[in-house]
Image (cartoon, rainbow, N blue to C red; front, side, top):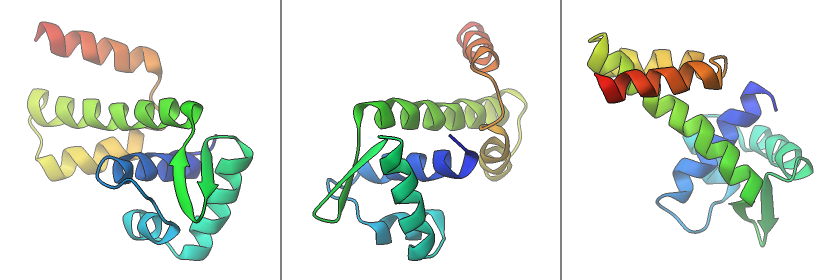
Length: 119
């Protein structure tokens, strides 16, 4: 799965925390892209069996939910580490976490989590 697909999955996950029915327009607003871009992403995510579209409502599949949670967790973990441990502003923490979360390994995240628990 590429970085763009992870971004869309995470957006769907975040929207799903507040709304039961997710539409392409909701995703476009969240990701700040055109509906055409979202349509292409939806097609790719459906082909990967990460989402299901029924009556224009988008839901994460079990596999999609697991992957989306993982991406979201990395974001939250990195934001917390940057803001609380190395003392950067919340804005910088969010932006930098967004920039690197797709490249950081699960092992590094696990060790950051362990560090934070002991901190």
